[in-house]
Length: 296
Image (cartoon, rainbow, N blue to C red; front, side, top):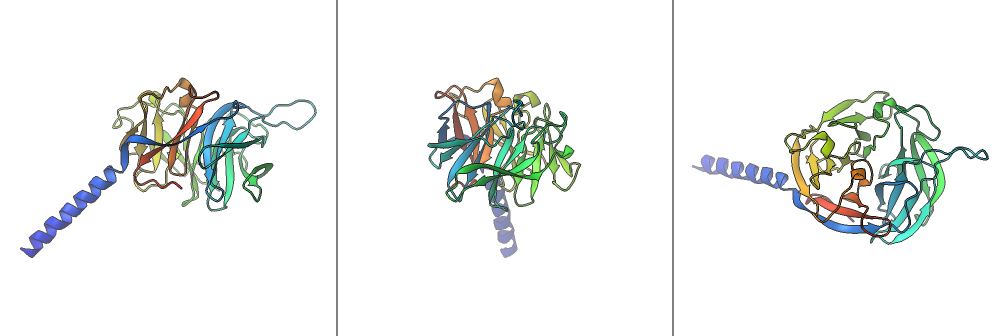
Protein backbone atom coordinates (compact mmCIF):
# COMPACT_ATOMS: atom_id res chain seq x y z
CA UNK A 1 0.00 0.00 0.00
CA UNK A 2 2.82 2.37 0.89
CA UNK A 3 4.52 1.74 -2.47
CA UNK A 4 1.27 2.45 -4.33
CA UNK A 5 0.76 5.71 -2.43
CA UNK A 6 4.38 6.71 -3.01
CA UNK A 7 4.05 5.98 -6.74
CA UNK A 8 0.86 8.06 -6.91
CA UNK A 9 2.56 10.91 -5.04
CA UNK A 10 5.58 10.84 -7.38
CA UNK A 11 3.35 10.78 -10.47
CA UNK A 12 1.32 13.69 -9.14
CA UNK A 13 4.52 15.60 -8.44
CA UNK A 14 5.85 14.98 -11.93
CA UNK A 15 2.56 16.05 -13.51
CA UNK A 16 2.51 19.20 -11.38
CA UNK A 17 6.13 19.99 -12.32
CA UNK A 18 5.36 19.50 -16.02
CA UNK A 19 2.27 21.66 -15.71
CA UNK A 20 4.22 24.37 -13.93
CA UNK A 21 6.94 24.32 -16.59
CA UNK A 22 4.41 24.63 -19.40
CA UNK A 23 2.52 27.37 -17.53
CA UNK A 24 5.71 29.42 -17.21
CA UNK A 25 4.97 31.22 -20.49
CA UNK A 26 2.46 33.93 -19.62
CA UNK A 27 -0.68 33.70 -21.73
CA UNK A 28 -1.09 37.49 -21.85
CA UNK A 29 2.21 39.41 -21.93
CA UNK A 30 2.52 41.93 -19.10
CA UNK A 31 3.73 45.45 -19.90
CA UNK A 32 6.48 46.24 -17.40
CA UNK A 33 8.09 49.35 -18.89
CA UNK A 34 7.63 51.84 -21.72
CA UNK A 35 10.62 53.69 -23.15
CA UNK A 36 9.47 56.61 -25.32
CA UNK A 37 12.23 57.76 -27.66
CA UNK A 38 13.20 61.35 -26.94
CA UNK A 39 14.69 62.09 -30.35
CA UNK A 40 14.22 60.88 -33.88
CA UNK A 41 16.20 57.68 -34.54
CA UNK A 42 19.27 58.41 -36.63
CA UNK A 43 18.38 55.39 -38.76
CA UNK A 44 16.23 52.45 -37.62
CA UNK A 45 15.63 51.68 -33.95
CA UNK A 46 17.17 48.22 -33.77
CA UNK A 47 17.45 46.70 -30.31
CA UNK A 48 17.77 47.14 -26.53
CA UNK A 49 20.32 46.26 -23.82
CA UNK A 50 20.31 46.69 -20.04
CA UNK A 51 23.39 47.38 -17.90
CA UNK A 52 22.51 46.16 -14.38
CA UNK A 53 25.51 47.83 -12.70
CA UNK A 54 24.21 51.24 -13.75
CA UNK A 55 20.52 50.34 -13.98
CA UNK A 56 20.05 51.83 -17.41
CA UNK A 57 18.78 50.78 -20.80
CA UNK A 58 20.54 51.39 -24.11
CA UNK A 59 18.61 51.59 -27.39
CA UNK A 60 20.74 51.13 -30.49
CA UNK A 61 19.95 52.54 -33.93
CA UNK A 62 21.08 50.69 -37.04
CA UNK A 63 20.57 50.50 -40.77
CA UNK A 64 22.93 53.35 -41.62
CA UNK A 65 26.26 52.08 -42.87
CA UNK A 66 29.63 53.84 -42.95
CA UNK A 67 29.58 57.09 -44.92
CA UNK A 68 32.60 58.52 -46.74
CA UNK A 69 32.70 62.31 -46.52
CA UNK A 70 36.12 62.86 -48.12
CA UNK A 71 37.64 64.28 -44.93
CA UNK A 72 37.56 61.44 -42.40
CA UNK A 73 37.40 57.67 -42.09
CA UNK A 74 34.14 56.00 -43.02
CA UNK A 75 31.84 55.93 -40.00
CA UNK A 76 28.18 55.13 -39.39
CA UNK A 77 26.04 57.99 -38.09
CA UNK A 78 23.83 55.60 -36.12
CA UNK A 79 23.50 56.51 -32.43
CA UNK A 80 22.90 54.68 -29.15
CA UNK A 81 20.46 56.27 -26.70
CA UNK A 82 20.58 55.80 -22.91
CA UNK A 83 17.60 55.69 -20.53
CA UNK A 84 17.31 55.14 -16.80
CA UNK A 85 15.60 52.13 -15.18
CA UNK A 86 12.21 53.84 -15.43
CA UNK A 87 12.58 54.70 -19.12
CA UNK A 88 13.55 58.37 -18.77
CA UNK A 89 15.92 59.67 -21.47
CA UNK A 90 19.51 60.45 -20.43
CA UNK A 91 21.68 61.05 -23.50
CA UNK A 92 22.76 59.82 -26.94
CA UNK A 93 26.17 58.81 -28.24
CA UNK A 94 27.54 58.14 -31.70
CA UNK A 95 29.90 55.18 -31.63
CA UNK A 96 30.26 55.03 -35.42
CA UNK A 97 28.73 51.56 -35.84
CA UNK A 98 25.82 50.16 -37.84
CA UNK A 99 24.38 48.28 -34.86
CA UNK A 100 22.28 45.15 -35.19
CA UNK A 101 22.51 43.66 -31.68
CA UNK A 102 23.44 45.30 -28.40
CA UNK A 103 23.73 43.42 -25.12
CA UNK A 104 25.45 43.53 -21.74
CA UNK A 105 28.02 40.77 -21.41
CA UNK A 106 28.03 39.62 -17.78
CA UNK A 107 31.28 37.70 -18.33
CA UNK A 108 33.25 40.79 -19.31
CA UNK A 109 31.03 43.29 -17.48
CA UNK A 110 30.75 45.49 -20.55
CA UNK A 111 28.32 46.63 -23.21
CA UNK A 112 28.86 44.97 -26.58
CA UNK A 113 27.40 45.43 -30.05
CA UNK A 114 27.22 43.35 -33.24
CA UNK A 115 27.16 45.20 -36.54
CA UNK A 116 25.30 44.63 -39.76
CA UNK A 117 27.00 42.12 -42.08
CA UNK A 118 28.87 40.38 -39.25
CA UNK A 119 29.04 37.36 -41.59
CA UNK A 120 30.48 39.38 -44.54
CA UNK A 121 27.71 37.87 -46.67
CA UNK A 122 27.15 41.29 -48.25
CA UNK A 123 30.83 41.88 -49.00
CA UNK A 124 33.46 43.64 -46.94
CA UNK A 125 32.82 47.03 -45.35
CA UNK A 126 34.56 49.08 -42.62
CA UNK A 127 33.80 48.61 -38.91
CA UNK A 128 32.18 45.19 -39.26
CA UNK A 129 32.26 42.75 -36.36
CA UNK A 130 31.64 42.64 -32.63
CA UNK A 131 32.77 45.58 -30.51
CA UNK A 132 32.98 46.43 -26.81
CA UNK A 133 31.53 49.87 -26.04
CA UNK A 134 33.25 51.79 -23.26
CA UNK A 135 31.24 53.26 -20.38
CA UNK A 136 32.70 55.87 -18.06
CA UNK A 137 32.70 55.61 -14.26
CA UNK A 138 29.12 56.93 -14.13
CA UNK A 139 27.81 54.48 -16.74
CA UNK A 140 27.69 57.05 -19.55
CA UNK A 141 28.47 55.62 -22.97
CA UNK A 142 31.57 57.11 -24.57
CA UNK A 143 32.61 57.09 -28.23
CA UNK A 144 35.42 54.63 -27.50
CA UNK A 145 35.12 51.09 -28.86
CA UNK A 146 37.35 48.02 -28.97
CA UNK A 147 37.09 45.26 -31.55
CA UNK A 148 36.31 41.84 -30.07
CA UNK A 149 35.92 39.96 -33.34
CA UNK A 150 35.99 40.84 -37.02
CA UNK A 151 33.60 39.34 -39.58
CA UNK A 152 32.71 35.67 -39.17
CA UNK A 153 30.84 33.71 -41.88
CA UNK A 154 29.38 31.42 -39.20
CA UNK A 155 26.62 34.00 -38.55
CA UNK A 156 25.11 33.38 -42.00
CA UNK A 157 22.62 36.06 -43.00
CA UNK A 158 24.10 39.55 -43.47
CA UNK A 159 21.13 41.08 -41.67
CA UNK A 160 21.21 38.67 -38.72
CA UNK A 161 20.49 40.18 -35.29
CA UNK A 162 22.21 37.61 -33.06
CA UNK A 163 21.50 37.15 -29.37
CA UNK A 164 24.10 36.16 -26.78
CA UNK A 165 24.18 33.31 -24.26
CA UNK A 166 26.65 34.35 -21.51
CA UNK A 167 26.63 30.96 -19.77
CA UNK A 168 27.81 28.96 -22.79
CA UNK A 169 29.50 31.99 -24.40
CA UNK A 170 27.71 31.46 -27.72
CA UNK A 171 25.40 33.27 -30.12
CA UNK A 172 22.08 32.40 -31.72
CA UNK A 173 21.62 33.85 -35.21
CA UNK A 174 18.23 33.49 -36.87
CA UNK A 175 18.35 33.25 -40.65
CA UNK A 176 16.00 35.25 -42.84
CA UNK A 177 12.87 33.88 -44.50
CA UNK A 178 12.79 30.65 -42.55
CA UNK A 179 12.84 28.92 -39.20
CA UNK A 180 16.56 28.16 -38.96
CA UNK A 181 18.67 29.43 -36.05
CA UNK A 182 22.46 28.98 -36.22
CA UNK A 183 24.55 28.39 -33.10
CA UNK A 184 27.86 30.27 -33.27
CA UNK A 185 31.10 30.18 -31.29
CA UNK A 186 33.50 33.00 -32.09
CA UNK A 187 36.48 30.66 -32.37
CA UNK A 188 34.78 28.74 -35.18
CA UNK A 189 34.33 29.93 -38.77
CA UNK A 190 31.32 27.69 -39.28
CA UNK A 191 28.21 27.33 -37.14
CA UNK A 192 28.50 24.58 -34.51
CA UNK A 193 24.85 23.61 -34.80
CA UNK A 194 21.42 24.66 -35.96
CA UNK A 195 17.93 24.72 -34.49
CA UNK A 196 14.77 24.48 -36.56
CA UNK A 197 11.90 26.27 -34.82
CA UNK A 198 8.68 24.24 -34.96
CA UNK A 199 6.49 27.00 -36.34
CA UNK A 200 3.74 24.57 -37.38
CA UNK A 201 3.03 23.69 -33.74
CA UNK A 202 2.81 27.41 -33.00
CA UNK A 203 0.32 27.84 -35.88
CA UNK A 204 2.67 30.28 -37.59
CA UNK A 205 4.58 30.55 -40.84
CA UNK A 206 8.03 31.96 -41.46
CA UNK A 207 6.68 35.20 -42.93
CA UNK A 208 4.54 35.83 -39.82
CA UNK A 209 7.53 36.15 -37.51
CA UNK A 210 10.56 38.38 -36.98
CA UNK A 211 12.78 37.75 -39.97
CA UNK A 212 16.33 37.77 -38.58
CA UNK A 213 15.91 38.09 -34.80
CA UNK A 214 15.55 35.46 -32.12
CA UNK A 215 15.86 36.33 -28.42
CA UNK A 216 17.86 34.24 -25.99
CA UNK A 217 16.02 34.38 -22.66
CA UNK A 218 18.30 32.27 -20.48
CA UNK A 219 15.26 30.47 -19.04
CA UNK A 220 15.70 26.67 -19.05
CA UNK A 221 13.21 25.06 -21.41
CA UNK A 222 12.13 28.46 -22.77
CA UNK A 223 15.42 29.66 -24.21
CA UNK A 224 14.37 31.14 -27.58
CA UNK A 225 11.64 33.63 -28.47
CA UNK A 226 10.50 35.34 -31.67
CA UNK A 227 7.86 37.96 -32.42
CA UNK A 228 4.82 36.81 -34.38
CA UNK A 229 4.06 40.15 -35.98
CA UNK A 230 0.93 39.10 -37.83
CA UNK A 231 -0.76 37.58 -34.76
CA UNK A 232 0.64 40.00 -32.12
CA UNK A 233 2.24 37.43 -29.86
CA UNK A 234 5.65 36.21 -28.74
CA UNK A 235 6.41 32.57 -29.53
CA UNK A 236 8.68 30.67 -27.14
CA UNK A 237 10.76 27.59 -28.02
CA UNK A 238 13.30 25.38 -26.28
CA UNK A 239 16.79 24.61 -27.57
CA UNK A 240 15.46 21.67 -29.59
CA UNK A 241 13.19 24.04 -31.48
CA UNK A 242 10.07 22.65 -29.84
CA UNK A 243 7.22 25.11 -29.31
CA UNK A 244 6.68 25.79 -25.60
CA UNK A 245 3.97 28.44 -25.61
CA UNK A 246 2.80 31.82 -26.82
CA UNK A 247 2.37 35.12 -25.01
CA UNK A 248 -0.22 37.47 -26.52
CA UNK A 249 0.60 41.17 -26.88
CA UNK A 250 -2.02 43.90 -26.34
CA UNK A 251 -4.40 43.96 -29.29
CA UNK A 252 -4.25 47.77 -29.32
CA UNK A 253 -0.59 47.54 -30.32
CA UNK A 254 -0.33 48.57 -33.97
CA UNK A 255 2.61 46.68 -35.39
CA UNK A 256 3.96 47.51 -38.84
CA UNK A 257 5.97 45.74 -41.50
CA UNK A 258 9.26 47.05 -40.08
CA UNK A 259 8.61 45.04 -36.90
CA UNK A 260 9.61 41.99 -38.93
CA UNK A 261 13.15 43.39 -39.16
CA UNK A 262 13.80 46.04 -36.51
CA UNK A 263 12.83 47.28 -33.07
CA UNK A 264 13.23 44.03 -31.12
CA UNK A 265 15.27 42.95 -28.11
CA UNK A 266 15.47 40.98 -24.91
CA UNK A 267 16.97 42.65 -21.85
CA UNK A 268 16.46 42.60 -18.08
CA UNK A 269 14.07 39.65 -18.40
CA UNK A 270 11.81 41.53 -20.82
CA UNK A 271 10.97 41.08 -24.50
CA UNK A 272 11.07 44.50 -26.18
CA UNK A 273 8.95 45.57 -29.14
CA UNK A 274 9.15 48.97 -30.85
CA UNK A 275 5.73 50.62 -31.28
CA UNK A 276 6.24 53.30 -33.90
CA UNK A 277 2.73 54.90 -33.75
CA UNK A 278 3.09 55.85 -30.06
CA UNK A 279 4.77 59.11 -29.10
CA UNK A 280 6.60 61.56 -31.32
CA UNK A 281 9.39 59.13 -32.24
CA UNK A 282 7.95 55.79 -31.19
CA UNK A 283 8.03 53.85 -27.92
CA UNK A 284 9.66 50.61 -26.83
CA UNK A 285 7.42 48.29 -24.81
CA UNK A 286 9.12 45.88 -22.43
CA UNK A 287 6.95 42.77 -21.91
CA UNK A 288 7.27 40.04 -19.31
CA UNK A 289 6.45 36.85 -21.21
CA UNK A 290 7.36 34.20 -18.62
CA UNK A 291 6.77 33.87 -14.90
CA UNK A 292 10.32 32.49 -14.69
CA UNK A 293 11.86 35.73 -15.98
CA UNK A 294 13.80 37.92 -13.56
CA UNK A 295 14.00 41.66 -14.03
CA UNK A 296 15.67 44.25 -11.81
